Image 1 (tube, rainbow, N blue to C red):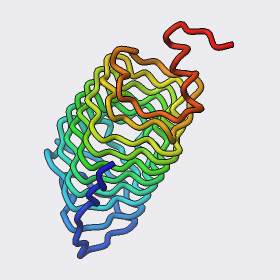
Image 2: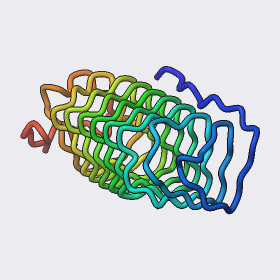
Image 3: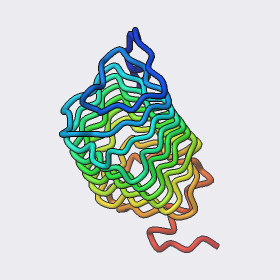
Length: 207
């Protein structure tokens, strides 16, 4: 896998324990323990770190995130549909039930995050890393996955139907059952111990 490009940040200001509207967010700033709400919305956030922040915002759709870091934030059930993320990192965040349909995700890291029941269908991913955490019962239908690596993450019952899996690396992921289209699985990278789980999708019985 190509080395992921880390977020590029030059943090010059630190704000803690404040109530802020997202329209007031400024670049080069680290926000910690802040409550963040929205008036009318913004189109772009860049060079910002959010640590342990509470987001009252439900919809982040059609936004652009550039060189943004989220640390220990609860973003469960948020709508990021049709958004763009470049050089963005999520660390120990709660993202269960997140809507990422139609997003463009390049050089994005998902580190020890809870992503159960999330929907990444019709997403264009390039150079993404999912490491640790949970991704079980999530959807990646008809997604474009280029240089995407799943490492030590629970992917049980994930749905990959309609997605070309050439070059996708599942060898370090864990799953008991998985949904995919066999004709699109050519080039999928798996561990030998996972082979029987994929073979069973073909209706082949191993004795």
